[in-house]
Amino acid sequence: MYKVTLINDKRETIIHHPNFGGIKVIHGEIKQGINQADGFSFTILPNNPGYHLIRPFKTLVKVYNTQTNQLEFDGRIFIPVEEMDESGVTTLTCKCESELGFLHDSIQRYGEYHNLTIREFLHVMIQNHNRDVAGDPIDKTFSVGRVTVTNSTNNVYRYLGYDNTMDSLFDKLVDRLGGELRVRQDNGIRYLDYLTQIGEVKNTEIRLAKNLKSIQKEVDPTDIITRLVPLGQTLESEDENATNASSDRLTVKSVNGGKDYIEDAEAKAVCGVVTKSHIWDDISRASNLKSAGQTFLKENNRVKVQYVITALDLSLIHLDIDRFEVGNFYPVINPVMGIQETLRVVGKTIDIIHPNENNLSFGDVFQTASQYQYEAAKAQKNVVQLQSTVFRQNTQIGTLATNMSAAKQELQQLQTAIDEADLQQISQSVSDLHRQLQEIEGQIQGLPTTETIVGMQKDIETHTQSISNIQLKIKSMEQTIETNSSNLETVKTDLQSLDERMKKLEEGGTRLG
Image 1 (cartoon, rainbow, N blue to C red):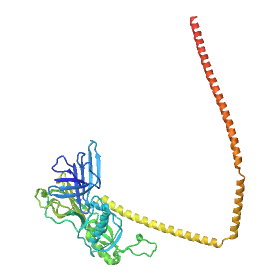
Image 2: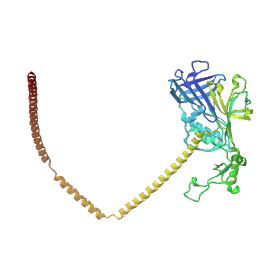
Image 3: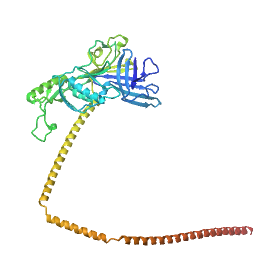
Image 4: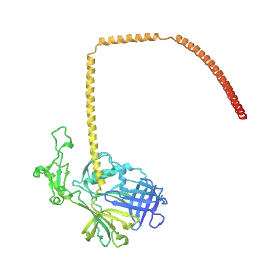
């Protein structure tokens, strides 16, 4: 049902095919979602044609649904992991990301932009990306596609820094204005769409006893707010040394009976007091701040619910018209759990080996604990970096001020020295220096002359020759002593031999008697 192809330098290699028994991956899973690069992971054995063709970031991957003729995944390999288990079987597992991940390969450039439509600002960011990846052997460029996201003024005022393009897209557009990003191929052109919402409402039901295999309902109340403290612009402080971090903000006390918070009575009855704050930096009037807080509380104060469903895609056997697609809405009916809602697919897992095990995630997208910690750590890191920058700047300013003060003091001392210079004393110092130079010259003249040094060298040579003669005599005497020692050893040996013979003769005489 699925065909997997690797592409290196425009040469294709099939590593999985439903009709070729010998060319298979032993594991293959596609994960699709909203506002994220799709993922694909697969595992192959050494006898697979693609085992030695993997090049991270260079090898492209395509997964085709041979039954629907649709491209389920289009991206690249970025993490290969080769391992051998305890039985000696070697495998290669590769993690892949879809084409949306190409936006991680570039950064933006600094600039200030105002009076641009959302589409025009998106075009600026895509141009920056395309310039960075121009000339790459792999085409990573995008064209701006459909843009349906709007705001109240239909224009944006933004700054761009040197951040990653993907991060910049979310920071400058998606996180502030909402909307969803989608990569779309049309006539060989890769488009990036920025839509208010991807997908449409479908009539294909997911119903118990029909195509619903399993369902899991997850309730997340962590975002519930029963008491909100709205905060507006930073108030000016009378303390000249105060920083923004230590300044107070506008509250709703003056228009809310002396209370700086607003409550959701129904939520409070269910969950008790859960107090949180929200900041509106652009609001400077308390009445507007209260209205904004009430609207925020109404729109965001809800428990998020997510359903994870395993459902049979009956369109594969032509029993349903529509297949399940990420972004679409489908009626979900389970009388046992009291569920009868039209829910949106926000995630889909495709098992290319066992298509009947595909999972669908419905409802709101949840952040895991690790993702939450990552975002919090990133925010804390930004604060620390900002504090460090301010500290360094203050230190540099203090150093410059100290250096300037020292320079002024030194200049004043030089000026005073010039004004108060004693020329007579300077003349006396020069005379003393001249006298010291004459004394040194006399000491130099008292040193031995060249002739004296030559005579000393001749005497040294004579004594050296005498010492050499004495050493020769000593060496001759040592040789004579060595010869005599050798003769003495010979005599000693002969005496020992005679002594032994005498002992043997004596022993023989005793035995005979």
